[in-house]
Image 1 (tube, rainbow, N blue to C red):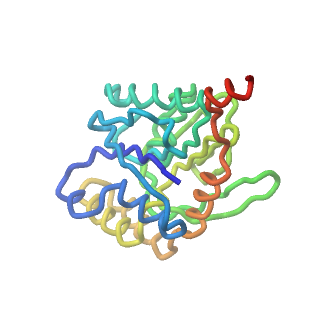
Image 2 (cartoon, rainbow, N blue to C red):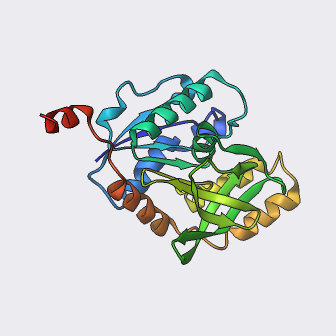
Length: 243
């Protein structure tokens, strides 16, 4: 399986340079369960987009400290690509910023979190039909989806974040949270943010890290999504079938 990773993280600080890029993080995450999968990373925040999306089995859009409401040209180009992928039913997974970009590209809405920053370990309730499954995931965001796109089904919810994930058909899945973050990285991130944010927010976030994220479980869900997601119909195949 070949997955295109669209990297949206705009952080080029010294802190960011000391840690793996988000493309590497997601590769590491998914290869824990599927070591033979292949990946190509495109730094879309620098204007580098895949030329031919038809050769990929799926697309993954990463998180970012950028806001989908920033009005940057690369964000508009990304949203155009999201609409194209959606029309072709290319399997697409979005995390944090990716979740929000898919929402806004397809008619949803993003706004500030009513309670401010959400950081640390958060219990998220995944909804699958009538079944609900709690998973602990790492959070680092100050905005969230407040209106899901038309036709989307909410697939996850959390305290303070009613739309923590959604799905459209069998080819789009999202999460507001960060499957790719390790315990070591989220701890380092909180140390870095300590100089910028309310000490009470940081203290609560650090205390939450006593509960680790369910990394294996969310990775399994992502793998299942890509392996079972609907594939788009190749127009040439349709012409052949029609004779």
